[in-house]
Amino acid sequence: MKKQFLLKLFFTTLLMSFSTLSWAFAPRMEFFVNREVAISRVWNNTYRPIVCSGQAFGRTYQGVVLNFWVNQIVVYPNTFVEVYVHSNFYDPMASAWAQMDCQFTY
Image 1 (cartoon, rainbow, N blue to C red):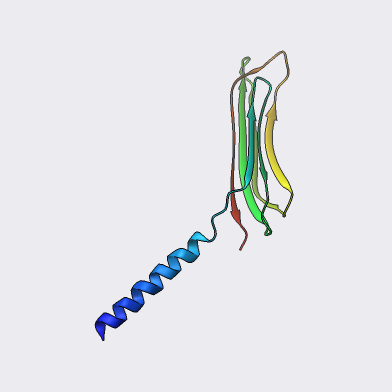
Image 2: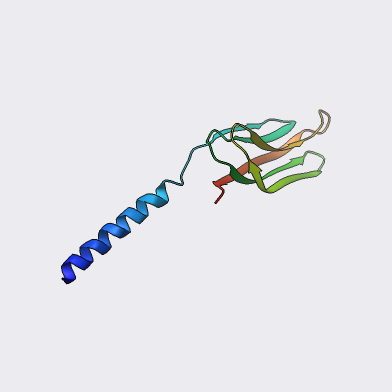
């Protein structure tokens, strides 16, 4: 009786762990960084809305700090969200980065 209960518990736990893996997805992402711009873009190529948060950061040679962020933006199917910072030609970026984190809506 105890062995049967443990076997049922094991398979239930195993099935629940597989169902959590079904939330994983690989969106189409684009990143571009050069001396004037840092961009991160995420396309929603699924059939469900996703929620994204992201940040773009840049520092120019003159010391100007550029920062842009979005928080919990809903991205509907076949649309995109992007974050970017832009400097001008005469004061290019000394360092820059951009990132996005996305998940399905519940």
